[in-house]
Length: 164
Ligand code: FEO
Image (cartoon, rainbow, N blue to C red):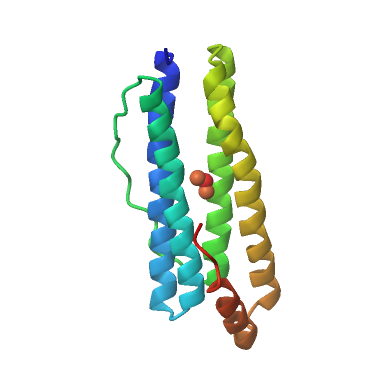
């Protein structure tokens, strides 16, 4: 039986993951507007993965005979002033999500909910990957600065991101 407190926290996390998807779609829309199609492709794939994260928790809650209650998704920021700012915000967001996953894990320990601890281990590993990937792109964007040809090259490179 899924402890009530854990069930509620998992429902909040489903919203966080859908919000992440929404935020990355907003970032993709910004890139599309700037004709940076590679960056847009990368962000759309990121958004797709976030729906996968939300559904992983959704399915887990139902497998544990819990009740999924979908919460309202806030409007994401749509105003960005540069590519660098987008990736700074993306990194900030992933760090926030890591904090949420850690809080969830701490709660499942407190509630002696062992299956949830096992389920969350996938997310703990995933967050290391998420932060590191975004950080690596941000570092390159910072190095590129105002050098447009280098930015176009990175855009082409990011266009190659595979879904999976
Ligand atoms: Fe679902 Fe990017 O963390």
